[in-house]
Length: 237
Ligand code: ZN
Image (cartoon, rainbow, N blue to C red; front, side, top):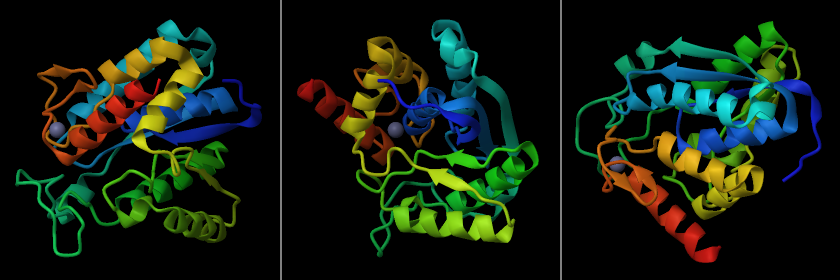
């Protein structure tokens, strides 16, 4: 897939998961240069932070044209978010669904904080294009993943810093099967295999067992979404 290149740099919210890894490659195909930002908020699946380096290293080694565009990687300590969040994503508790239909893996304000810090970093470094893997098509119902939320946040950040920011969410209207198909369109089977084996989705942070869709416990909502999407992608090929 060839995208018209925007002659400007971008900053990608890169957690080490399937969605943000796909977004990172989308941004490498689209922008002149790409920096990455990740957050350590004491998530149970902190193993994903280790996946970030592995993915960046393999992109540099196996896709040199993209590797040449990769700039600095920023890892921010956001322990305070874990300290104030009583959720199954930051505590060792059972994953369950609350009365409002939201799973208790919801970390209130997470994406608002992430984008605000990304904008603050981008302000200093001349990065006005911010890219995130949020999606409201095939997701857990988190309100801070929704298109309206992020459009409002784009306006808020641009006004609040008196500086034009553009939030890009290339996965917003894609389901998980389409996200795998996007990876294939961008980088072929080699990229799908890189993302399948190196990216992390499992909320429990398990990477012990390999499945057809990658590593994970195979039972949590994140593994379930990923497995179903991968199988639909394979069935539709
Ligand atoms: Zn899992």
